[in-house]
Image (cartoon, rainbow, N blue to C red):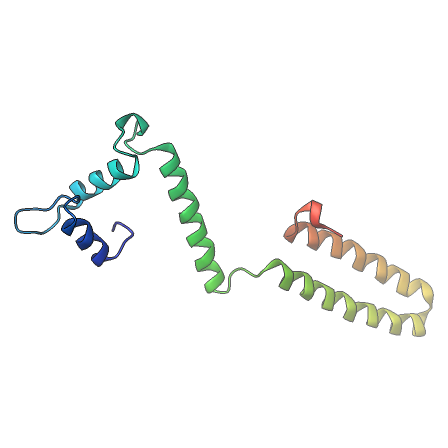
Length: 136
């Protein structure tokens, strides 16, 4: 619940900082409040309206987004840009080879039409997966 292991919470309790019940158990809302205050430097002025510091909220948002992306990557829902670029390059190469066959059969105009379409498709695909400043 706190994003740490049970042994970490127990260590906090042994060191005397983390609030515990008389029976040595923990009351989660109290521990959460203690942790928020600890992370904010025990300075209530650092806490925002909702009781959470803006920096802490941003850190939590970034970590959450990172975890979501890692999960998608693990599920195979995301591919690294380099893999996509290489895949597009291989596809374009195969189509260009087919264009050479068309050129031999139907002449240079057939190949030029196909090459132009490949170039257009390649630019469009790269815009989807690569930031504009990285397009070669």
